[in-house]
Amino acid sequence: MELVSTASFFDLQQFEDVFKEHYSILFRYVKSIVKDDDQAKDVLSDLFLNLWLQKDKLQIQNIKAYLFRSARNAALKSLSARSADASIEDCWNITEDAFNPLERIVAKESVKIVEELMNKLPTTRKEIIHLRLCGLKNHEIAKALDITEKKVEYNMREAIEQLSYYMHNSNYDKATIAGGLMLINIIFTLI
Image (tube, rainbow, N blue to C red; front, side, top):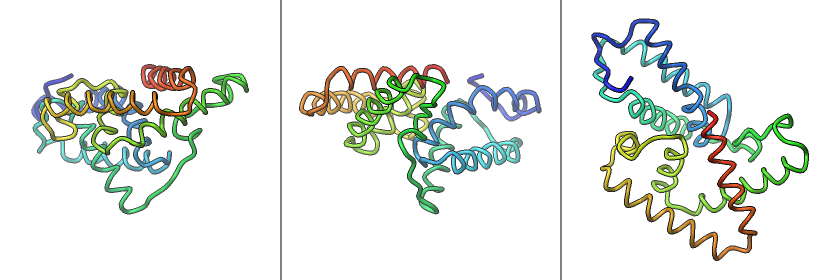
C-alpha cells in the first residue's frame, strides 16, 4: 500500500491493515529513540489516533515513509518532554526464552558493543542506520528524515566507513562485533 489518497485510504479495514503491517517495526524504531516500552506505546497510540482523526485531511503519497517520519518526530518530541534510559536488555528485547543463558549473555554483550559503536556516529547517520535496519529503502529514509536521497546515500557510506574504523580500532573481539551486527539484523528482519 504505497500510494494513498484520502478518498480511498481510510475505511476501517484499510486502517487496521496499515496498523497491523507497520506497528511492530514502528514500535522497535520508536523504542530505539525513547528507550522505554510504555513511552513508545504512548507515542504510537497518539500517532495512530491522530492518523485516524486526520484521515479526511491527509494526502499521503507513501504511507511507510509518512509513518516513520511522524513516529520520529513524535518520539523526539516525547523525549524532550521526558527522557528515559533503558537497559540493553529492554532495548533489544533479548528474552530468557529466546536463548540459553550463555547465548543470552553473549548476545547482550554483542549488541551492547555494536550499540556503543553506533552511538559514536553523528545523529543523522545513526538514524539512517536504524531506519535501514528497520527495512526502509533509501528513498523512504529520505522522506522520513526530510532529506535528499543523495544525502542518505552519502551518510550511509560515511556511517559504514566510520563503523569500520571504530571496529578495526577497538579492543573488542571482531567475532563478537560481527555477531552483534548479525543479531541486530536478525531481530529487525523478524519484526
